[in-house]
Each structure stands twice: as C-alpha cells, then as structure tokens.
Length: 98
Image (cartoon, rainbow, N blue to C red):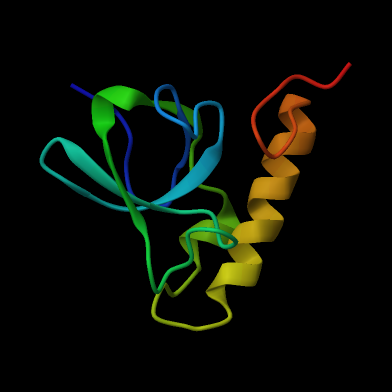
C-alpha cells in the first residue's frame, strides 16, 4: 500500500492542506497521524488517509532521535520541515518558489 513510516516527512496530496508537509507520528491501518509543529502540534495532531499522502523524505537523523512525548519536539519538527521545504524549493503552503 504505502511505504510511509513514522518519523518520515510526508506531503499532502488532497484536501485543503494539499501540498503541505508533515512529519508522520504513527501509522494506523490506512491512516497516518501527522504533525507540522505549528498549526498541528503534537498535542493535537492531524489524522489523514495514507492514500492522500506521498513520501517527501525518509526520516532524518534529528527526527529519528526525537522523543515525541517531549514538549520541545514541536520546534525540532518545524526546523526539519523548514529544511525540507528549502531543499524542495516550496513554500509552507506547498506552492513552488519562483
């Protein structure tokens, strides 16, 4: 089905958040629990169908070492997503930089 695993960066393909990058907290059957550290923090993550996601990047060393129960994890997630967006040349909303 999908090769998305926890701590990977995934990009939304459908919905009002289309193009937006998230970190996968866990997968549950055909759904993934996601966070971006800003609008969807660890305290209130987003649930999204795996078929509406595409793998953006396999988990980085910083994400693999991250403890999701730690309150400071949101800032690490924001930084890792910012690095991913700069490498992919996209904005926070997912549109291409010109």
